Amino acid sequence: MEVHEDASSVILPDGELGTTTPFLRFSKTCLKNVFSVILLFMYLLLMAVAVFLVYQTISDFREKLKHPVMSVTYKEVSLYDAPGIAFYPGKARLLSCKHHYYDHIPPLINPGQPGHIECTTQRINYTDPFTNQTMKYALVVQGPRDVKKKELVFLQFHLNETDQDFSAIDYLLFSSFQEFVNSPEKEKFMKDCESSYSSWKFSGGFRTWVKMSLVKTKEEDGSETVEFKQETSVVNYIDQRTKPRSDQLFFVVFEWKDPFIQTVQDIITANPWNMIALLCGIFLALFKAADFAKLSVKWMIKIRKRHLKRSRQVMNHIS
Picture 1 (cartoon, rainbow, N blue to C red):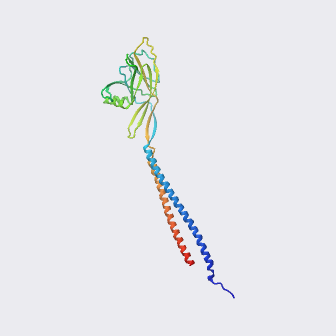
Picture 2 (cartoon, rainbow, N blue to C red):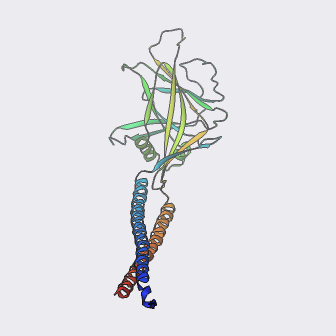
Picture 3 (cartoon, one colour):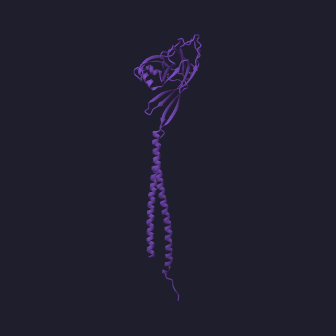
């Protein structure tokens, strides 16, 4: 008897194929879902890093605002504005004052005797700015200007017998002798100088050589303060006068150390434009990553729906 194979006999192979193909499709879909989850976690990690970078950038910017960096610049000049040198000689008397050049001081002639006073000087009396009771006498002398020619000012003071154990003359430096001359209130000018500048001393029986340098400091409010730095060398004076004396001779030299004016100012290294550019880049990356995550989630949902739909179709087919 001849058996004819009905078309329905191929249902089994089709069923076997139907059970194999959805399994392969499920494996691919699972891998895609896992890959999408990994991408989503990577996005969350990148977002956390971006938030940390934003926080760190803002913190660094605030820290740099609080702690500016000191900047030092040097400006070369050939002529300084002649400084003012205010002496407080007390009972001592100015014997001579001369300008010399190229670090050359000629030998002394008749030391202890009045000589030529070739410097511009002014005398002033004013009340002590700290006590407002004691009167102070100051001798203001115009300092050197020409630093290229190594201009210096050499002064000689004389003090008769004194009951003090140590003898010294106080002095202070201020930035401009011409400002003092042009000032309508010279007493107030000297009070302000004494309140703002430090004072120094030079001793009797020595030649004190003072080399000055000028430092300008720019404040945050735009104002500018001036400070003098000094390097002092002291040489013993050999008194060769014939008769023994109980008086004291004072010798002092003022000269510019170098032709450079030092300017000090605080600079804020934090640049707001750099911070804004960095933040814009971070936020742009965040938005791009957010778009990518959004598309990834949509794609996962779409794949999930497609997988569920195919699963239902397979189940219906098997049924």
